[in-house]
Amino acid sequence: MIRTTGLTKDFTAKSGTVHAVRGIDLEVAPGELVAVLGPNGAGKTTTIRMLTTLTAPTSGTAQVAGADIAREPGTVRRRIGYVGQGNGAGHAQRAVDELVVQGVVYGLDRRDARRRAAELMTQLDLDGLATRKVSDLSGGQRRRLDVALGLVHAPRLLFLDEPSTGLDPHNRANLWEHVLRLRQEHDMTVLLTTHYLDEADAMAERVVVVDDGRVIADDTATALKHTLAGDRVRLAAADPADLPVLAAVVGGVPGARDVAVAGDEVEARVADAPTALPVALAEAAARGVRVVRAEGRQPTLDDVFLSLTGRSLREEGAARAEAPETAEVAA
Ligand SMILES: Nc1ncnc2c1ncn2[C@@H]1O[C@H](COP(=O)(O)OP(=O)(O)OP(=O)(O)O)[C@@H](O)[C@H]1O
Image (tube, rainbow, N blue to C red; front, side):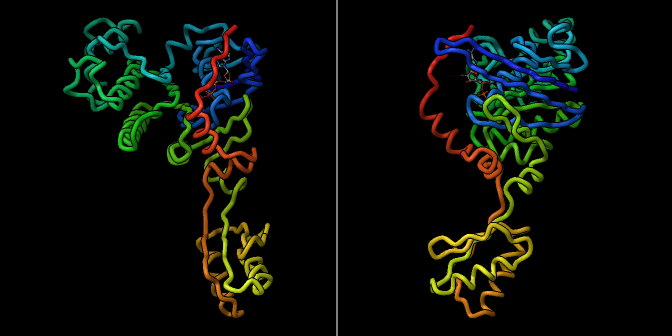
């Protein structure tokens, strides 16, 4: 459904050239749900904008929904849906009119456009809001209307750029419920970007991690967490003199490696924290070591990013959210 080769985008800014995307090779099969995850400025939006023909690549090629983004941009656009960041819907318009107009733009006659609009309003739980002005909708309702706008022409491939940013947890869950149901009903391929690690983890069958314009990992969330981060256990001894014995105990549990002693604690990677922890505790007790704290931890996608880059995605997101990006000048 998507195949890119060496997709690259440079921008010319006042401060010099910005290498936003540095040669991305990506394949997405029909029906997949892929999350592109990465810190602010990693190149996620620029990649989506190239794939949706909104900006031309500096170099590289991409086939999207069976058409070439450079040679057949019109065909690509007809076959895909795109929900960008922020709200695409106009403000003074009534919700239903936005959908009807979008349908007409995509070639439906007015009657079909009205029928499709009504169908989508129901599917996205917007019934009863048809005649409300877009500006009077709540954030969650407006985002669902944006998704409806992206689906008017029943695309086989849907791009969602940070669909749930700014929504509260209830509205995020609600939006996802709708997207996942629609995807199943229409057998749609979905490529989305998100900052929410838990969202990528829970929703996507595949997670593509990007950093500084490059793909640095691409696999299922489970595989990424298993191979790049791994489970951990941490145990603290009441008596520091017991630490060498405790380290030996921890080192003996299944799959233990990277055993480290810091302060009054022993920490190690293990194959499976929930089963390793009781084994370690029982063995420590048998050897007369009194353990005062014990913790087993399973990795998150943030641990994956940390292991790949030495940086935390969570901290970067928070730091950048507090300090708005300085404006860069486009070419
Ligand atoms: N029009 C432009 N002119 C100059 N630089 C740009 C332009 N658009 C994007 N950039 C730069 O390209 C890089 C990638 O930006 P992009 O918006 O693709 O990142 P992102 O991963 O989507 O980030 P975010 O999560 O904040 O949306 C950033 O350094 C950004 O400042």
